[in-house]
Amino acid sequence: MTNQNVVVPDTKSGISLPMVRLSGSSIFPATAQKPPTAPGTGENLEINGGGGAAKINSWVDSMRASSPTHMKSSSQSLSQHQQQITLPSALDNFDQIMEASRGKQIVMFLDYDGTLSPIVDDPDRAFMSKKMRTTVRRLATCFPTAIVSGRCRDKVYKFVRLAELYYAGSHGMDIKGPEKGSKYTKGTEPVICQPASEFLPMIDEVFKELVAKTKLTPGAKVENNKFCVSVHFRCVEEKKWSEVAEAVKSVLNKYPKLRLSQGRKVLEIRPTIKWDKGKALEFLLESLGFANCTDVFPIYIGDDRTDEDAFKVLKEREQGFGILVSKVAKDTNASYSLQEPTQVMDFLQRLVDWKKLAFQESRM
Image 1 (spheres, rainbow, N blue to C red):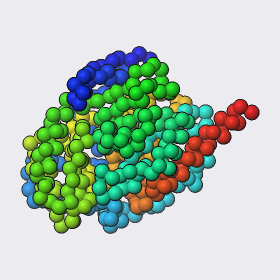
Image 2 (cartoon, helix red, strand yellow; image 1 turned 45 degrees about the vertical axis):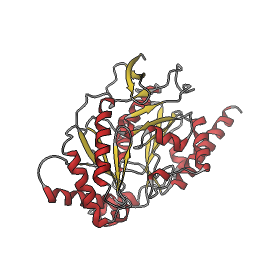
Image 3 (tube, helix red, strand yellow; image 1 turned 90 degrees about the vertical axis):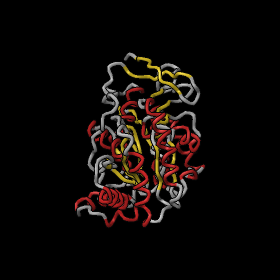
Image 4 (cartoon, helix red, strand yellow; image 1 turned 30 degrees about the horizontal axis):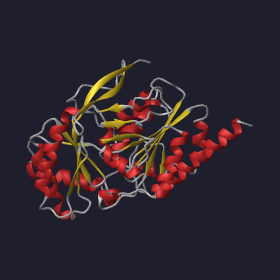
């Protein structure tokens, strides 16, 4: 497999970085294309055009539907509730998952917020426990491991602080491998991918405008995640959610090359390129040399609507499994479920123990 080095500017340091792009890859689409919405994912909210108060009201309704406290009262059908309720536990079915992975290389993909750390009111204080960090460190000694988050890559790295991992920040639009290379890849050059670098100045403008627009709304928090902007309304009174929606709409009306989607009590502003966590998963598998392999077994664990893009990719590839972290009913492309970060940690530790036992048995 031949690698082609593409130069990507690093606006923070002022230097150019090599971006590893695999020759003949089909996962790098042209910019300014609006990605399709998968059923059950964080759907795009319409920005431009008329609608006025009606559009704001529809946004607020969507914001309510995506928030955990309203999930059970959403307009999901009974069959959708049953799909989540009957989704098998990844812990209870651990042996079955391992049997499916027999003879294949497991590759781990982990969301951060709500998966490795609990959801908290202040996104700047979403710390993972020391025990979770130790577990993830052990996991990375057994399998290639990546963190795939909507947060800025530098920010999620400061939370995790494990140099041996791959990090995909900004919903996969900012990917970097271990600085010193990885035992799972050839060569020493770190894997770097920034497919939306041309949007950086625009994202900075939008961030500043949204900070100014939301400063009078108590509890609203605007987060610059480098290649996307997150508007958190978790600490905003529900009767003021319309203020947040109006502020976002008034800013984004001027930026047709940006799109709006939603997560758990957060509105996400991103470039309109066909790139998401599913594309990041494909890029990382390709970088690791597993693009067209049948002996790879990716496991993706996440709790957010944006993780559905990765779950869908795994289902379409018929490789590995998606594991949804949730206590409430959701329509999902995942195959298994875990209820909370403590169960995620238990599952990861069982993976480590399973790998150690398999290694010992192979030496007997």
